[in-house]
Length: 65
Image (cartoon, rainbow, N blue to C red; front, side):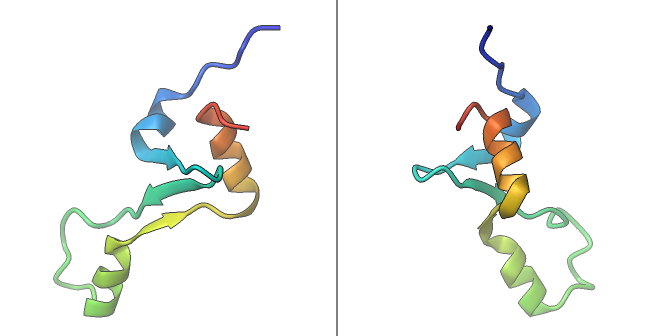
């Protein structure tokens, strides 16, 4: 059986950490930030990890376990 290719769209947007978690940056940060609260803007700046089944699916697409 052949190896599964990595999905380039996922590679551009997400990163696999050393422990196998998938790290991503939040959406909705490019413009129209005036209407958002300080707290929301501050939280959107941070990177986050995928949780649950989504983490497993994205890791598979990235070529991980």
